[in-house]
Image (cartoon, rainbow, N blue to C red; front, side, top):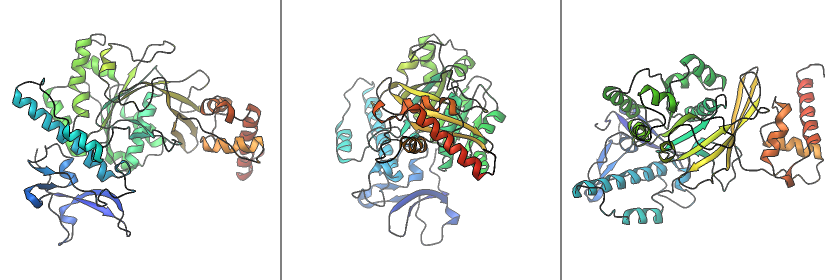
Length: 442
């Protein structure tokens, strides 16, 4: 694949000179005098390549160096909050991986020693970031804790029983990425384009963004070499940050493989999820899967190879009888950690809650952190504290009053928890105020 010479990568800064964004724009739209070439010669004979070129499927040119952040890695400008620095870090990881593979190829085997000097220096000087989840952002995440669910450039998983809301979670994360201007690829082997699109629009996704950035695929035959080439070409073109496969079981079956056969499951991961995650665009690949109706189970049905092949994080999503939800009924799902290969969270930790609250203007959906919250409010009454807590939990106008208390119990420690009567009174108070504002009888 060649570099895209018709696109120019620009670093956007505000009036204070602070880095804001990176964009690729058509060369024809750049005024004369400010048009940088996609590939230019840098001092010392190295090749400076813009972000757009690094994010294509082409390998870095010999002697290439990644683009510098406009802030130059200045203090107060960590890579974790700068897209340019994050891209630089991800490119350095790919470059090291390419060098490692080249060394192995020269030796004719992969059993030779791997030189870690570049990796060590990169981690120490900050040019290589520690791996962390960045896709699937969570509201109310603690400042010192994880704020997202899924790892980019890795195969992640989300499993649960039927009607646990896995597709809702996948589409919620997709709507987040679309809202950021990113592309999403959704491989749907279970539903249909009408129901998926209806859910996205019901969540408040912009119709134009859905049309342009949400790429829906509905494969009905085995993945041939030509089909795979077409899919990877689509990834080259779109540079998605998220790829959702719904579901693993249906995809495995479509390939004529047996879900309990270790070798065939390992082959399926090599066939589809791994190549997607290893693409230079580094999308977070999220596999939606089913699990048996076993209380406390932490893994999807089928071969144990599914566990070993998860490179990012595997979550289990569940609902109770009291918290079950639908398009017409409010509720929530609990998302717990089954595996986190990078140690961001511990097994069995509650990573997040999926809050669903249908209303006349659509379905309000939120992914909120599983971390506990405190609700101290000195001098306030118990009902006032409860009302303030409901606002923090996103339950201020929550329709599911019957089980909101159950969610409050899960999100708070016993020390910080208001009593049930205060929570119910706070909800009633807000409902009455809303009715008065709408001119409805109480």
